[in-house]
Image (cartoon, rainbow, N blue to C red; front, side):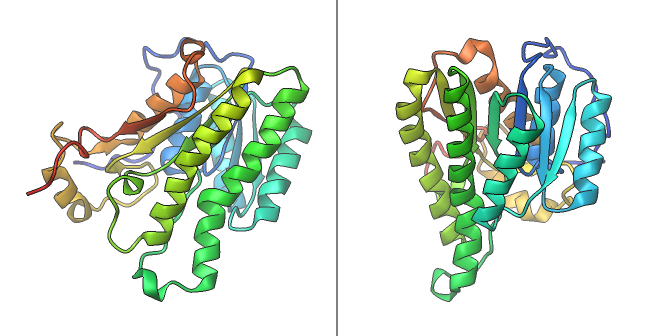
Length: 268
């Protein structure tokens, strides 16, 4: 698979129907990769975007790209390895914008290694980024959505490793498994307020804008994908978009595996 460079302004597609016009979405980890693509797809549906990432310059570049798509955009730097930073991100977001309609908990990270070698610091960082910070952000978003009369969408991002584990990623996979349970509990509690909570589970997504092209890394996965190709960032963005559109109003507490059939059978 050829790795194309990331365009500053993606091409318009047939899905751009402006059905999210007037909505505002916070997408964590939206300076590159899946988060950047998710933010672009929501922007092309008319949603205003709050960009979040660790570093100032990539945040500013992503904000500029969103604005070129014709929507309002804001940028906030935050290191979600610290739960206090998640609280600050939520507080600053709600101070910047009149209302938050969509939260996409996309930011994630992993540190590879045998589980018996994981240090307390490595455990804390992975759990904070992948589970605790999404929980904190969802708390703030839910309180805000309820206070303004209800309605809203929260979309969490998990990993196929929560279903069929990765090698040497015990903490990451475990934290993402917790995110899937969190999705169900939040969906149950928030449904009476008209807030839908769902989860998207990426499979082997090799085409991630801003990430290096590593064909050897994905060769083994490709052999086990019945659809015959590796995933693209757009595959995940499309699933997130579905959970944010009016058509999914009766869908909540669901975990959608987007993997080309990778998890369907035992590998021989």
